[in-house]
Structure formats: structure tokens, C-alpha cells
Length: 294
Length: 319
Image (cartoon, rainbow over all chains, first blue to last red; front, side, top):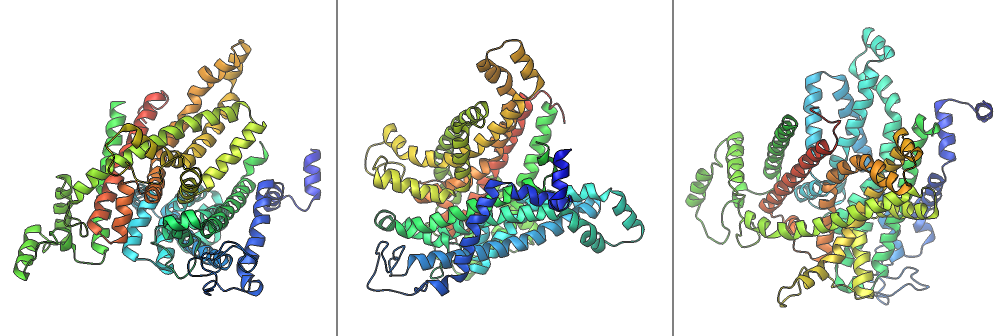
């Protein structure tokens, strides 16, 4: 009782306020935010701070280790690694965010249509989702990439085409339950169309799934992009991305002699993915009303 | 039980047919003439001969007929020719690559199962201790590090810096075959492949065992005076293992993905390397053949998992 009193005194007791409090009490999630915010600021503002451009060539410093002039060293044609790591972050995050945005829209639409529109459509869509989830993601990624070819836009398309089925399942499960609720039945009885049902009832009631999924999927998409570019099938050089910087390490000379050329983008990748996963897990726990009972 | 197995088998076969249809459609979406997949590129052919081959292969037929013909060929093991490798058959390429991949994945999975289950039990029994926290952090790192990065870092640390293991390949070129040589090449990529899996299995094992340890029958066992070791091993572990078995089956697909990166970093002559090279050179018949075989293996693995799960869990009768 005392706990309820104090929590009410701290600004509201609605589901959102409670979710926010749960998130704010989650150490790992806050650590994730504390890593992500400075990282994002650096990635967005680096041209203002850094003297080097990602594709500037310094012929006096080929394959040089970290120094005062180039903090993280240079690569084989004298490009600044720090600048490339930050530009690579821009590209990797851009690819991840855009492809997740597309796959969230596809996943929500497919899932909700599957839940709301008749048994036959539902069965057909769900069998297709099953099928799409059969192949290991990396294999589907390779097959799709072999058809679209390399490039930023093809990479975004490939990743978005790959990521929606799981979300569609989750949205469908949520909306199947929602469909039987009285306010939705009432809304239908008053003649609401599919669009109205999805927009006014479906979306607000599955927004938690979407937010959590999108956050965790951004981390997954960063990894997919990096994997694809690592194999030389994603973002092509000279544009920098974390994956194609790691691709340089497939050459034995770079791997053995110039470790800074691949260790730093690798570290940036892992730290970012970890931080996003922390935040995503925190959001999931925050939105889960059962987590307060434990 | 038999009924259940038959039903799952039917679903598996249905999935395989649908998968082959999907692959066939993708094959037709890909740039290039599908006839390239069926003719030996080393033999020069005139227009009339091409037309004859087209007619013989049925490529002048409507697409559904073509699909059935292709399916028939695939069932008989005729997946066409490689476009890039001097007309080797796709089936031959796949056959010589599948063994090394199974060896790598099998070893990696075995290590992951032993380490993951062991660490999960320790984490659950000593929950919230320093050991548990350490293991959990390690597991989170393991899950968050992509396979290609662990592969690179592992290669750098163990082959380049410490020189403990050879830096790639499956056997020392030119040396006579020996099991020791194979094992020394296998151990590093298999260990690295197991990291992500061990982490995942550990987290499931820990959560599942914690849940079981809180149940009444475990408390009864303790109240009877059963030693804590036997409470965990005999009473709790059996039930806690059930969800882990499903997890292991469903992560085979992820293992295939990880194996692709490890093979390409370690130059391991398996399916992954074959597939990556085929994608790089746009060798569509090889891409599609390899994908079909991998898909069939994943479907088979899932089928076996389902049946194993039904066999060890008496609650799953004929669902």
C-alpha cells in the first residue's frame, strides 16, 4: 500500500508513467542510453569536430598506426580510420533505421490484415510467414543479395524484406485477442471499416510491440548489414560502413599487420549493438505489466 | 506418437515443396537466361542446338510445367551445372562440400551444448553470485558479437598472436591426411562457432532451471532430505531440459548462418564458402542448389527436434 502511495505521488499512475518508471530503474537500459547518446552525437556532428574527411587520402600516412595526426590510424590508401568509423556509423545506422522502418510497416500491415481479414487470408499469410522463417536468415540474405546486387538501396531492401515475418506474427497474436474485445466489436457494429479499425484500435494497442521490436531489430539490422558488407555483398567501397571496413580484414596482411584498421570498426559495432540491445530489453521489461510482480 | 510423427512429416514435406517453389521463382527472377544453368559452358553451341536444348529441357513450356520438370530433376539429383566452375555439376559440388560443413557445425554445436548447459546449471544453482553475474555478462557479450567478428578476433588472437592454431583451411596442403592435422584445423573455428550458441543455450538453461527449482515438487524433494546435488540433477534438470531441447533444434538455422562466416574467414571448404563464392560470381544454379539442400537440412533438423521433444515429454501426446 505504501508503495502504491509513493508511486502515485511521483507523477501519475497510468500504464505509460509506470512503464517509464520501470525503464528509469533499469541500470542496463540507462547504461545503453548513456553509450548511445554520445555515440549518436559524435556520428552526426563529426565533420564539425574532426579535421579529416572519410575519403581524404593522406599519401604520407599509408597503413600508419594510431598517432596524434590520425587518432585511430590510417588504412591502405591513407584514409583516416576515425573519420571512416564515424561515417561508417552513419551509413550502418541509416541502413538499419530505414530498413527497420520499412519492415515495421510491412510487419504491422501483414500481421493486422492477417488477424482482421477472414480465415482463408489468415491461413495463407501465416503459411507464407512460416516458409519465410524456414531458411536461415543469412542464407536468405545471400540469395536476395545475389539478385539485387550490392549497394546501399539494395541492402536496405534486402534487410527489410527479411525482417518483417516475426513482427507480423506478434502483431497478429495481439490483434486476434483484441478483435474479440467489446470496444472493437462495438466499433465494427457501428460500421467501422478495416482502415479505421487498424488505425484507431490496432495501432495504439500494439504500439508497445512495435517499439520494442523496432529497437531490438535495429541492432539485428546493423549486424545483418555488417555481415553482408563483410562478405562484400552489402555497402560497396569507397563508401564506409562498419561491415565493409571489417571486410578489409579478410586480407591476411591487414588482419596481421594493421589490426587497428578492423579492430576499431569492430569495437564500434559491438558496443553499439550491445547498447541498443540493453535499451531494447529495458523497453520490453518496461512495457510488460507482469514484470512488476516479480 | 506414430500419428504425430506422420503429421509432422507431412508438414515438413509440404514446407520443402513450398521452399522449392520459392527457390524456383527466385531463380527465374535472377538476371540472365535460365538455359545457362543447364548447358555445359565449355561446349560451343549454335542457335539451332540451343533451341533444341531449350525444347528438350522444356524451357519453351509454360512456367508451371517448367517448375514440375525442374522439381522432377531436383528429386533425381539433377540440379544443373555450375556457370563458373568449368561445368561441374551442382550436385557434385554440394556433395563434396557438405561433409566439412557438417563436421564443423556438429563439433561446434556439441561444444555449445556441453558448455551452455553446464554454465546454465551453474548460473541457476549459484544465482546472483559473482560467478552467475560473470557468466551472464559473458553470455550477453556472446550473443551480441556477430560471428564474423568473433571469427576475426579469434583468428587474430589464437593464430596470429599466439600461433596456437593454423590460420585456415581444413588440412595442411601437401601433407598426408591425419586426424591430428584435421583436429588442429577444426578446433578453433568450431570453438568460435560455439560461442554464440553456448551463450544462448546457457541463458535458456538458467532461466528454465530457475523456474523448475521454484516448483513445489522440488521443495518436496528437498524436504524429504534429498541432497542438493541430486535435487538438481535428478529432479529438476529433467524437466528444465525440455525447452532447451527445442531451442537447440530451432537454432540450427542460426548455426548455419554462423558457419557461413566462419568458413569464409577460415577458408573452410564447406557449403558456406561455396555459397559465398557462388553469390560473388553470380553462379545462380549453385546458389539455388546449395540453398535447397540447406533448407532441406534445416527442415529435417526441425522435424527431428519436434519428434525428440514429443518423445521425451509425455505431456505432448497427439496434439
